[in-house]
Length: 130
Image (tube, rainbow, N blue to C red; front, side, top):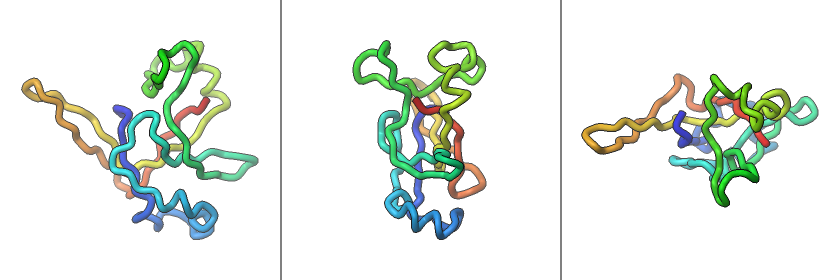
């Protein structure tokens, strides 16, 4: 995933329990066609054995990054080897709901954005939070 995605919870309530929708009304009104790193977007995390929906900025911030920069793409092949990410894996997980995500294809010196969909209207990507 390139780091940009779309989410339309507003028009896709059918995937969730009514109780969940009622408990997190502001989250389920969320719709954004082009979410990029550092934007605020809904996430789902586990708090005291209950799933909680919250809007949060996404991407990883570390003091060693240049000011204003966010790390948002870590290779799954090396995530366990990196000192900054291996501690996140064990304890800090969340789910990021998405409707589709984007990948870029270079064609004749241009970059074209392509939408990639899953079979369900809203899917979840497991990520790590710091």
